[in-house]
Each structure stands twice: as C-alpha cells, then as structure tokens.
Image 1: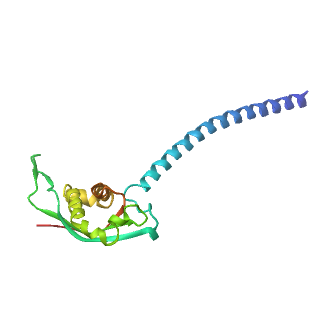
Image 2 (image 1 turned 120 degrees about the vertical axis):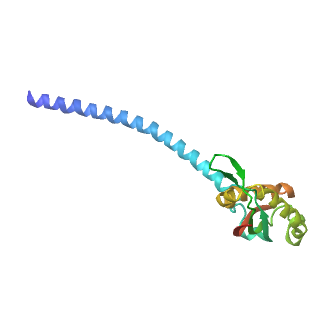
Length: 181
C-alpha cells in the first residue's frame, strides 16, 4: 500500500509540475512577444536615425564627389546672461565660429549635370548665405552642443531646399573653432 501511495504521490507531483511548466511557458511566451515588438520598434527608430539627412551612408563612396566650399566665419547669436537678481540680459561679447565646410555630392543623381563638377562653383555665394542664415541663429553654447549633429542636419536640409535638389547628400564640417571679441 505504501508503494502505491508513493507512486500516486509522484504521479500527482509530475502532473502539477507539467501544469506549472505550461503556465510558465505561456507567460514567458507572451512576455517574449512584447519584448520582440519593443526591440523591433527600437531597431526601426535606430534605422531612421542612421539614415538621417546628414548621414553619409546613403551613397557609395565611388559615386561621391566632394565639393570644398572653404573656411567660413560666422557671427553667432548673443548669449543670454542671468544676473544675480534673476534678470536676463544679452551678452555684449560678440562670438563667432570658424569652420571648414565641404558638400558631398551624389554623382549618380539626375541633377549632377546642373550642379556637379565645376558647375557648383557658381553657387558658392548662395550656399554660403544659406549656411550663414542657419548658423547665425545659434549661440556659442548651442553650437558647441549640437554643431556636428542637429545643426549640420539643418544646414544640409537648407542647402537641399535652396538648390531644390537632393544632389547634396552630406556635409562635412572640420576645424571648428570659436572666438569672441
């Protein structure tokens, strides 16, 4: 009788174990689906960031042409200074930024004949004016924080809009320096 009771007890424990394993698998599976969906949305968001307007992965290097605009000096917007009494005033110090800028052109783009090669030199003043109109809105602090990211992307979007073409797919900014007088 003890042998049968022990066998029944083992059988009951095995059935409970199978039931608990099934419940655990169901809960893990639903959590796993939610985690997979979250990871997919994160991957999608990262993919959008990787292919932002300023990204340089859009065009193969063999289909790229670099057009060097040269060194630009742009006066920046005045910084806001908060006094000891809490009043906000504008700084009297004029700040500027100096940087080298080059455009990355897509040689396979349909507008390459109009803008590519030596044709781009006739648009130098228009491009410089566009870059200056974007950058001079920012203070030194904002440029130090976002110049290679958000501001570069804004410059690219403005140049593309001004040229009414996406032939310019990237912008390089080098030798960035700040100064004041």
